[in-house]
Image 1 (cartoon, rainbow, N blue to C red):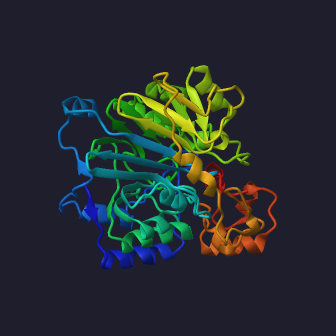
Image 2: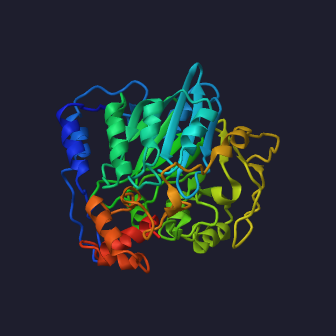
Image 3: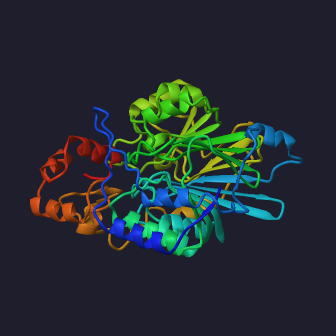
Length: 438
């Protein structure tokens, strides 16, 4: 499963390509999708198919389900903690568990590019190395701290979707991965893997066409009888593909797609997953309206518990593979209705279990890097104030367009970016859906 990165010619070709104004040709409302088939990252994964798989991240070759694997295992599972880290208007989740003397660490998404809160949180949790880092898609609020993380921690493997971005954050992240000793893989729908006792099913995407948000890597993690689903910023169209795939989507805990935006979390998808708990990651009082009142009402009307990092701070799920408990840094309720979520709840009714790590380590959340300047409002990039480097973290804005944008200031709204050469209605929609520009 694991592919060793090629560090010679491929590195040179990829970095030259990233230095240009790489554009993600995303589909407009008419469905016209120019397919980017020559991604250099994709070429690496294809050319390395003949290499041996890594030891720690093993691809499942039999067709048995995760449930079958658990039934055949002996003895109880060690404790698993899943930390939904409070990273403002971004995403990052940390898995920590062990199997006897072997310890495992998985990171799903890496927070925002203007902070170091994920790096600090990993240090507070005494992380020494990381078995697997998954970045759902190349947006700066998901791949943001990957470069620093792989440079700081020995990393076994990195998964990316294969979609690219013209942002400097993405380019720095790829260069850091190439310069590390990490293996590289682009997961695709239907693949199955195991990292110790953790089973991982790839739910999405089936393939890529340059639609970064919509083609977010979506995974189902199964630990004993307890299942977690993460979908990045995958939208309703992707959710429908997951449903139609025939894969088992049922899970106990679902991280709501796209920070709880109404672009995701269709009623049919929520029904297919049928979680008892839904969790979203969003910045407090963010300017994007996340989570959507429509999604909040949908979850609460279905009788599911709802947690959000904007209200509860860092959220930690602890499980033995049979039952789970949830601890939050803050108590709070989520509008438009109260979720009834307290600072601690448990699926078994046992309120004695607690998690202290989130209390002590979350004090570094939302720290901003020195280059954030006055152009940042939470995770928002003010198009009338941001620097050339900051602007390049917006989808479809490369160096040339960033310079043109600055020359054309001021703009009355994000829609006004259509004044920039090459930015049409479809790309305006992409920029709005990304939710980074304001």
